[in-house]
Every structure is written in structure tokens, then in C-alpha cells.
Picture 1: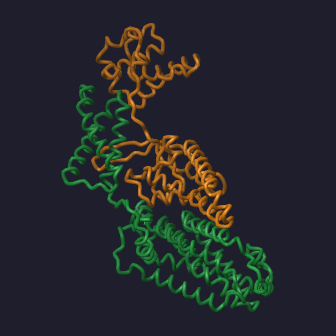
Picture 2 (picture 1 turned 180 degrees about the vertical axis):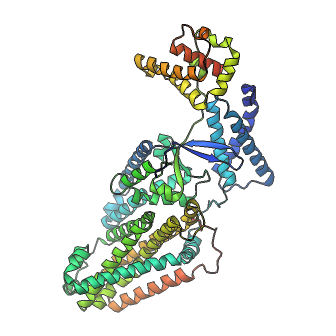
Picture 3 (picture 1 turned 45 degrees about the vertical axis):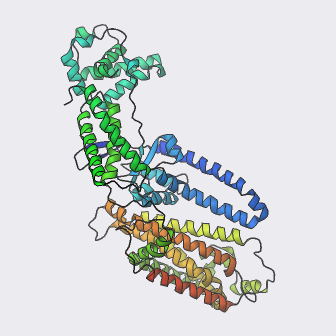
Length: 255
Length: 340
């Protein structure tokens, strides 16, 4: 039976602490591979230019060196970058992902080498069909090379504080009159729900007016069911104002 | 429960920053060894950050701080709980002359299986040619092998000019690239529970057996030995070692008679796989040079006896190296983590 896919890798430490690392999806990884492929082609064309003199002096030796360099570059690029750059290549860096040990331990040279050598199998028959299929079936989005090397590719997060000032209500927050409900709200709202609230408000200008109203109504409905405020507190509030009030109640001290 | 979040973050921030500095030092300088006091402090900071993460996880309003702490704890966890040595110095000479042959011997059973599969393939290929000489066209992938061996020998022995002049290096590079690619594939196909590796070894054996019997039947045994031995004495064992690596991977996947979990089994063989395939690549570089610069030359310019003697000497030295080199040295690390 295929196990359900999850988009995070959860690791429980012996101290009982659980930390979750978001896994990179096939599309992101394919784009990163595309960037890396482009980089190796550019690097190769630069090397070819550098070898031009050698090819004039000795066409045979020049061709041999070019062939070996190209082969070494195709194999060595991923291994060297991921080893010396802690699981990242240029493509992975641009796409914000990195390779790591499946148990959260240090990435070993042998792991990096195996996952890159097994690209020969993963890329069969064309365009990583085998590796991509394995990734879709894998619970941890692992291609065959990752599976053999005990590695996963995760999103390299940059922890940043959101700009809460942008999402605060312009008018008086009617929820402030109910501090006990606000306190319970802070307890009940999960980190993911809070992130959805913040992101929906931060991305206001990216949404069409109709889509925005529909989205805000849906999110506001969810929070109303989660922790209802009395009708007098929500009287005359639009969905957007409702969400801004919620954000202010949650993040008041952080703005 | 955190009553005053702002105060909590303000107070803990200094410890988080200190832990981050420690991690940056460890990640930047792999060779750095912490003394006892530093280790204790590092462990204290890790536990404090882990405890803060547990506390803040209940506080919905701080996803950004939670993400930051998760990242810190994950990095510190990998430093504290990793028990494998992290090689940070290149030791290519001791790796090649000690680790590689030691690893080969440690996984000798897989080499024996690799050899046995190839031998069965050789018998099959030879049998096919003996029973049905017409099958040569199907069995042999290279056009220059499909003709009459006697005519080829006659043609090549009559050649007065160096037909490979100005192409030696390119030909050697092409052989190296092709053979290393096939070897990596033999390793990689181990992921198919060894089926792919077995098919590849068997097919290699078929070609070898078919070619050998074809030349022997044509009375060209000496030419065959003089042609194949100089490079084949290294190239064929190298492909067998690549097959050995593929079978080691397959054995780790299947796990017969092994109480370890799949993840632990794969972890236990990973160093050996890399050592074997890197060793194979070096052997194939040598084989490519010999095949291009020596194997293609025949009588009268090159004495067959000399080529055969050279091939035999290589084979003897290779097996002496694989079975004896590094025998007096202690293997590095339980998993043979290579230091290429």
C-alpha cells in the first residue's frame, strides 16, 4: 500500500522535541535541476574556450581533455557543490532548497556521492522519468538516489518576522473589549492558521477584488467557527475588517 | 505556558544568537574540536533552544520565531547526534592503497557472486556461438566484431601505417567515459534489488564468451589473448567490482539475515559503495590508456608474447593489490567512510 504523502519531515529528538522540515516538491526540484544543467553547460562552454589553444596545438589531446572534462563536470558538479556547500548547488540555492540526511544528521560525503551517481538510473529513460515517478510515490518525495543515500531535499527556510504593521486594522478593534476571548483565540489558533491569516492580508493587492472577497469570507468563516466573538463585536464588520481585527488581537505586541 | 511573549523572546534571544554563532563556527570549520567546557555550553544551548521551541510551539502568534528555532534546533541536533566521523582531509594515497582493497575484501562475497554471474554469461555466450554461429550478429553489439576473425587479424597485421595516429588520446578518453558510465550503471542498478546489475553482468559475460569462442574457433587464440589481455586484465575485474558494488547495494535493500532496519543497512554500506566505484573509475582510466596505446597494435610491430606477458603481469599485480594491500592496516571507520 502506498503510504500517504506528507510535505514535511518530522524529526523527534531524544529529548522529545519535534521539529518539522518542509520537503521540496518535484516541480521545485526539477527547476533546480534545470538551473544546474544550464550552469554546467555554461561552465563547459567556458572551459571549451579555455581549451581552444590546446585543441589547436594538439587536436587529439584537446578533444580528449574536453571529453573527460565534460564527463567529470556532469558527475562532479552535484557531488562537489553539495559536499562543500552543505547540500546545495547553485540551482538548489536559487530555488531555496537543500539536501539533508533523512534523520537530520550531518550529510556525509558518501551520501552526496551516491545520490548523485544514482542520477544515471533516476534519469532513465528520459528526463528523470524513473526518479520523478519514485518521488511521486515516496512519502518523503525521494528519488531512487535519495532513497539509497538516506537523503531528502528540504526547503531551506529563512526565518523572518512578517511586517505586522501592514496588516493591523485602521479603525478601533472591537475585539479588544473581550480580552478573555482574545486569550482563548491565541490558544486555539494553530501556527499554520495564523500564517494563513497573515499571508492572506499581506497579499491583499495580489488578489482580484472578487477573489479577495471570496477568500476573506471563507477564512473569516473558519475563524468564526474556531473562536466566535459576540454579535455586537462583529456587527457591521466586513470579512477583511474581521480578519484585520483578528490579526491585531493575535499580534498586538509584535507590531 | 508563556505569559509575556515579548519578555520571553527578549530574554532568550541572546542564547539563540550564541547557539547560532557556535553552529556557524562548526559548519565553517569541520576540523574544529570543542573542548569540554565548549561542548557542555553547546549542549546546554541546544537543550535550551529545544525547550524554547517546545514552549513557543503552543503559541500560535509566533510562526516566524518557531521556524527560526526549528532551524536552529535541527542544525544543532545534527552536530550533537552525529556519531560518524566527518572526513575533512583528502588522503588519496592511503584511500587507494588501503581503504579500497580493504573494502574489496570486506565485500568479497559480492565479488564472488559478480564473478559467478559473469562466468555463467560467458558460458552462455560461448554456448550460443558454438551451437548457432549465426547468432553472432545478435549477440555482438560492435560491427567490427561481427566479421570473420581471421580476416580481421590478417587485415590488422598487414597494416603498415599507424591507423590510430592522432586519435589515441580521444579514443582513450572515449573508452574511459564509456566504461565508467557502464560501471556507475552497474552500481546504480543495484537499486532494482540487484536485478539490473545481474542482467548487465550477465550480458557483459555473453559478449565476452561469444567473442572469445569466435576467435578460438577461427584459430586466433594468440591474437585474442594479445588483444584482450593488456586492457582486459584491468577492465574486466573493474566491471566485476562495479557489479560487486551493485550487489552490495542490492543486499542492503533485501536484507536477508540482517536484523538492522533498511535505513541502517543502507547507511552501513554507503561508504563502501563509494569507495568501490571510485576505485573502479581509477582502474578504468588505466585500462583506457592501455587499450588505446597498446592493445590495438599487433604483429609485426608488437610481439604478442610481450602483450600477453604484460597483461598477465597486470592481472597478477591487480589481484595481489586487491587481496594483500592494506592488510596490516586497521580499516577506517565502521562503515568504511571514504576519504577521497
